[in-house]
Image (cartoon, rainbow, N blue to C red; front, top):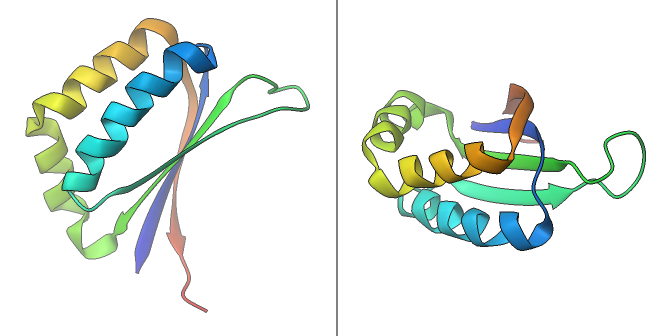
Length: 97
């Protein structure tokens, strides 16, 4: 099964967020992780960011260890922390219907 990690971030403009998100997406792809970035356009979260990463449930622990050792991922995380704050993060198990 697939796990989706859904995170809500606040901060950063499109011009600031996009280059860092591209770097992180490329780094994640090397590990087989799917990365998607969206921005709220309406409501109380307007301008905030929705990040969804997806990976195989069986690889969860292996991927966590690999990401912790990946210099590109760690650099991207540090850059993101300069302009954005994570509001929430939830893990969900995707159902194959």
